[in-house]
Length: 497
Ligand SMILES: Cc1cc2nc3c(=O)[nH]c(=O)nc-3n(C[C@H](O)[C@H](O)[C@H](O)COP(=O)(O)O)c2cc1C
Ligand SMILES: [Mn+2]
Image: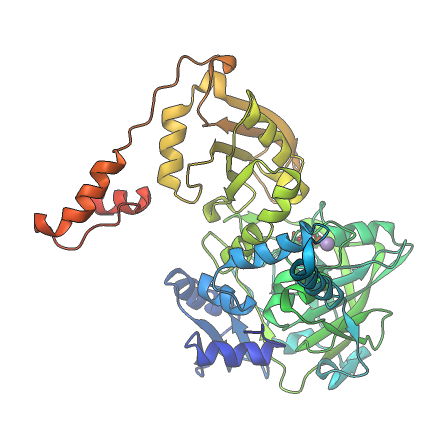
């Protein structure tokens, strides 16, 4: 099934699938929406369309809150399917034979189709407000947590151009609403939008799209190299190009199907105090200077729907945006580090705190090599701790990982303390941006790594397993438990947690 073309199609799809609830009661975007959503997210509940959030615009939230909805957004059964499609293109080899050539052409077409397309008009400009007509306070912008400095736009796609070569960038950076026509722009030190800003001479034009089809909205959060346009990725993943129209007051193309677009500019060196903001680390990030965004135009669909998301103590809705990235980028990571079998970024680790990675180990020090590779790879370079396990360990089964770390690690020999860049939001390191890294080698070790002879792991013989499979009914013990069930599941049952 083709992914939805815009937010309206997405909402219809969610509704058809029983994945969306409309709330007609009046609710307050000041804190009240957060408390409702926090409970619904943690219960694995539906997307919510608040029809009366004390604003003329309805508020959509929790659209990404479960794995099932994330798969619906991409039109796939499993997020790994999305990764495989991307991997297929990345790994393209010269085709052998006719069938492969035809398949190769299809892949090339999917790349050609990913280029955004300019169209003459779009529903995102049905209503055009400029100058004094702009009033951000008419949107149901949430104040999420009691200690927040004010209302924050939390699910934007921020579009800029590299002043050197015009290359587009799209990033999801929150915007603190300061008054009717200005916001702060929270792009962190490692981000591409900020790099465009630093390269700008005097002024940088910006457009912010709100209320996109779910794949394009996701793409704004994807950690692509700076020179790769996030809208290309969106077009590739959707299977059709993202349509753009000319901005009304800026020299930027904006999504034709967005619900709302904010156009404007940042003056170089005009900073404001941004925050505090209850962040995805589970703590408030303290006030810090960030650029001021002046809104010169607000364009909309008639009856525009405003999209929002709450971040906070994990798990929150952003968990599945992060998991989508984890799955989609696995093949790309394998391109540069092919010995990686799988990896997991635990949601509780806010994605940058921990990375568990399984490898096909083939030489002494291989685990350390992979730790350093991760610390040198795109946004993964900000990872604070890396746990390396052997290829047969399920990285998504945290009980199994804990078992391997306990069983296979000599802390003196297998723990590596290093240092390097850390996430902008990490409050733990002594210095902001820079500090310690922890690597734990939980693989089996050989004599060349200073270990004694490694003992064999306990495994039942295949013969006995087969016999018990065959005879299970005879024992009169009811339905057979899954012999390959996860350690996590087994432990929960055993300990009745
Ligand atoms: C819900 C959500 C909110 C985010 N807020 C911010 C933010 O305020 N500032 C920031 O720098 N990154 C934020 N991010 C992460 C960026 O969107 C992500 O790093 C993205 O890759 C940035 O694009 P870029 O690589 O083009 O800079 C957020 C991500 C999500 C999912
Ligand atoms: Mn980028």
